[in-house]
Structure formats: C-alpha cells, structure tokens
Image (cartoon, rainbow, N blue to C red):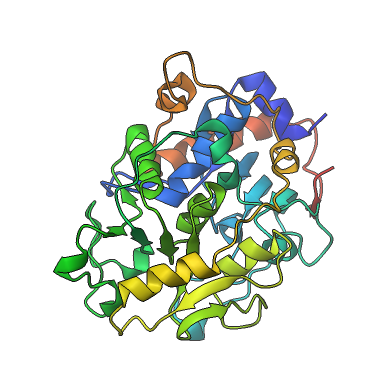
Length: 368
C-alpha cells in the first residue's frame, strides 16, 4: 500500500519521472542528473518515462537539486534535493524564495537531507528518511577497477570552459592546472558525459580508477563516498584541511550541507583553496589521506524501502553487469522538450476527462 504513484506504476508498467535530462539541443548528459532514471529503474525494475517538472499529471522526482522546479499536480519525492530559491539561476538580487505552489500536491517519502525536507514540506515535518539515491549504487554495481591515477579532481559544470567530454577548466580555475610532472598522477574529471548508458558506467569506472578524489560536484562526492574512495570536498574557501560549516545559513554550499547533515553529521573535513591559486598536489594528496574517514551512517535499507513504487531491485544477468540489463538499456536519455510538454498536456486532459470529481485540495507533507 504505497499510494497513488505505486498504483499507477502497477497499472501502467512504467514510472513517470521528472529529471533534468538532455534536450535535442544538447549532445551530452550531466552525469549526476542522468543517474536519476538509472537509480529509479534499478530500485523497481520498471521502465521510466520522462515528464515535465511543471505538470498537472502524477509523477515522481529523485536525484538532483530539482525539487524547487516542480509545480502542479501530484509529485512524489525520493531522495531529492531542493534549492531555497524558486529561481536559483537568476542573479542574486532577483532571487525569489521557494514556496510550493498552491496547485501542487507534494508527497515526500525521502529527501537528500533535512534542508531539502523542510523546503519540500513547506516547513512541516517530513519522513525523516534521508539520502541521495546514488548512495545505493554499490548495491547494484561493485566492479573491481584497476587504479590508474593517484587523485581525481571532479569539476562542477560551472567550472568548465566548455561541454566537451574532456575536462577543460575555465581560465580562472588556476587550482586545476596540472603541471607536466603530474600528468600521470592527477586526473581532471568532468561530469559531461556522452548520451548513452554505457557512458554512465564508464564515468563511474573513471572515478573508481582514482586512489583519491576531491570534488566540487555533489555527485562526485556521493560516488566517491559510497564506494569508500578517500575524498574531500574541494572548497573554494579557506586554506588547507578544514572543518566544513554545516550550518544551512553559513557559507558552505547548501547541497553539501544537505548531503552530510542527512547522514547525521555535524561536521565534515574538507580541503580549502582559492580557485585562483595553484595546487600543491603532493600536499593535497597527503591531506586527503590524513583527513578523510569513511561514512557508514546511511540507512540504505530505509532509503530503498522509501521508494514510492513497489521495490523490486534488478540484478545483473549471468555474465553481465547491470548496464546490460534491458531496464537500463531501454532508458531514453535525450528528449524533445516540446514533444514532452505536448504529450503531458494530452495526458493531463485525458486524466481530467476520466476524473469523477474535482481534484482534492493541495496538501504538502510526508508520504504515509
């Protein structure tokens, strides 16, 4: 008895999911965003169909800082993050606080952490179940990958000069300059990924091939932490090893605060360095070794059980990995957004014609 979304998935054999996917104008995936349909499919074994964030139709949200983008209809959240701004990409002077719209029904089964929980519940009480779904990835894929690099540096999209498949930092990101003598030891990693399931696997393998990780990418941190790779958040503030300020109103990236407070942590070690300063790679590697401790506080069983459709995890078939499983190879990862919206409006109209009565008033709260 999971609710309306589970009923829909049982009846239709598909999960409607809103995620920040690729458009026809893009020739790449953003690695973290693309893991949203992957993790849902891994957890339930069903195909996943992309739907718009703004819709009157029943749908789900999972991986990413995307909760603030949803409005209208009924949305079920599983491990989702949210900005405190309705328009986070706007100039700071134009930011508007995020408040769930009156025509939205939010069902919150789990969030990335307590910061997002408060936002998506309108300040009310949530389920108390936290965790990014990507934490669960090692349950499905745990390969033995040969280490190729002493340290990997995972860059956020905002730090990249382009959207090519090799990491090219912006000119002002001096801390990512790799001197020739470190070329075989330091790997710059981009989250820009070719549009295919195989490429998602290869990006994970690239991270796993590093002995250590520093990252400004949230999902770079999640992958490294979940697989037990020594890692530190590469903060642009401070100098050298430091304790992250996990106060949501402090200066640390709220995504990182949400992630680690969701694990019950009050502090987490990081490495601070201005983006305008060159990196002492040997010192950075020593700092990772000396300051990282494994995270083992996630209740993965509770997070998986909070999936708002029937839990039926897939397993790799004999002689294969999960990446050859039809539920993953069948995912569509690039969409015509105009067509998505047209199809969604048609589905909304059809549902309205079938409805026996007016929709229930908007409610915001934890899923039961």
